[in-house]
Length: 154
Ligand code: HEM
Image (cartoon, rainbow, N blue to C red; front, side):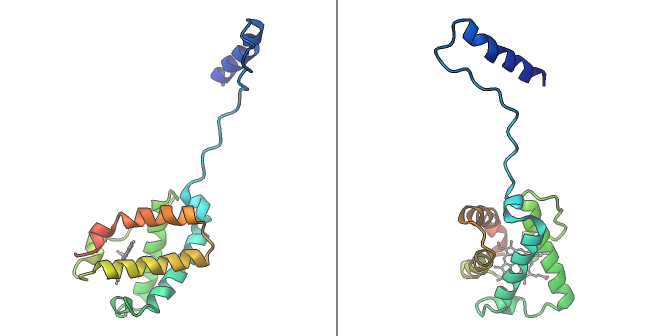
């Protein structure tokens, strides 16, 4: 507030002091903070839609659905909740991920690069279905791609 006042006084005073060769900077209010990826995705309701579509894609994906075949309804509901919270919190939303670490959850599955690629493709299809912009999609995939080392080959 005080700084803005000083900036305003300077901007008004400068031309009178002979500094009028350049236009005086217009004092502006602080810019609004940039929207987080979470907000750009559309918040929790939009993330829930993406995760539901993603899980439907995974279940239909013969390359990887055997890994999920043993999960009962309660386990799928838990996985869904954890995936939503994970994406929400990783993109700047006000959520807390309370599931296991990626290493812990995937150890013993012997997941390969091909499995990982398959799941990423299932997620991309879900994001495309939801109309997520390419830049936002890339940002999310970059975040999740960083988890690969804890998921593949465990
Ligand atoms: C970016 C890639 C991945 C992410 C972000 C991810 C994320 C997660 C999360 C958050 C959980 C829940 C952990 C918990 O409930 O404590 C989970 C569990 C699981 N993930 Fe992944 N995962 C990825 C890749 C994969 C791949 C490639 C497969 C297999 C093809 C896979 C198969 C599973 C299975 C079967 C479970 C359930 C484990 C259980 O409930 O016992 N995941 N994953």
